[in-house]
Length: 159
Picture 1 (spheres, rainbow, N blue to C red):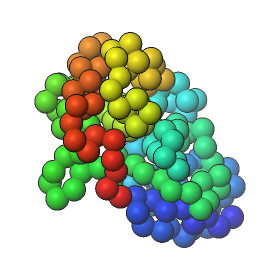
Picture 2 (picture 1 turned 45 degrees about the vertical axis):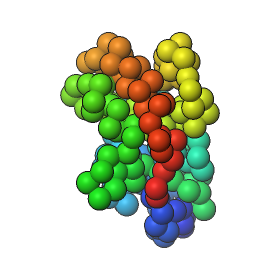
Picture 3 (picture 1 turned 30 degrees about the vertical axis):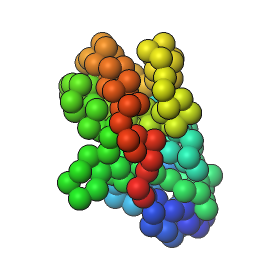
Picture 4 (picture 1 turned 120 degrees about the vertical axis):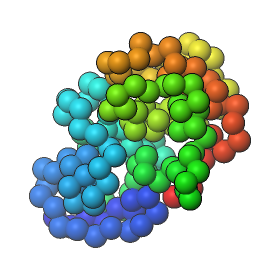
């Protein structure tokens, strides 16, 4: 089947198998490997991307379902060696360790901040509950999201 999504501001056009998952389309066809495959069961959130502005676990979406959609991955956030405010907050607040969950966590945090620009700690914890981190214990991730909430441009995407 033919798909033509816009990924990080660039229109793509590819023939894909109908059963190809969006995460594999992004990694293997488009070549954007920051979206990680963690579980293939929607349990971990490592593959979280924005699909038409909503965060989704790309291991639960078929590439053909994203035909014509606007997809944003973590690769679209930093520009000209300048981190996106959410990425910067993760860095400044030590919201990562091994880094495997970080791209999905950042995308989920961005989506959360779009819906709740000034979240409480409880709203952050609740909003990120579908994203697992096996290293940090979440304290610094929550701290990073709360810090990002106060930064200009934290809810925007430049793609």
